[in-house]
Image (cartoon, rainbow, N blue to C red; front, top):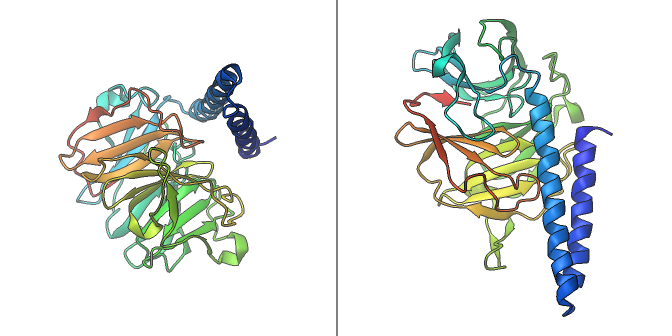
Length: 328
């Protein structure tokens, strides 16, 4: 069974557990209610451990067991960093937190992002200022070596509000009309212009949508048109920060085939309105650059089920001076 299918199977089991718990926790039997709550917590812990194991397994392939982070300077230089403390938010970096120049000429871009949220394979996508989409392969992603496969143009017409990767060639594009579309780059590892669905995008999100507030239990309208940032933790998880600074968790159940199937959106945070850049480090690891140029780390342990659980219950400041044109 593949990782994606295993995760889907675990989440389906989690839904059945919650259904059973809801029935047994509301029948007035305190012992059954306690067992129901215990079952939910135990299964939730299994979900977090499973995803964490996959993330750690991905990171073991790195020569330096860290998360690659790239930044583009004003002169177009591409800088490489590797965050060793990605699991706990510690200030631990390769090369004494000093960036290595791994590229030049990365100007005139609308967006740049890693193909894998954890950066475990060196694939990078770039949307040029005229909307052309390029694929790159950085073979030095683990050590910061200046070692690349030449960029390849694989598409055009990508002038949208934001484009992100969900891993494995899955790309989401937030359109100017507020809708969200899905496309899959079939030759993710080779870089040829091979696409699923003959290159046609599939709409998977509406400009206006419903969201469940777990605190009040109320359904409100918060659509993709309200998004200021979107980013993916992989395996269908798509985070959204709206213009008010609220953070929402979404899980695209149809992430493998582009069908419009989602779990219930959940609000999991607020106060993100001062961020200049927000991106994923894989799984529930979230990086953000605030208005002062400080790099912040967050660890969301509820990445697969939308639970509002966080490592440390706060951010960790892991750097300063990150006032770069792009950070990803």
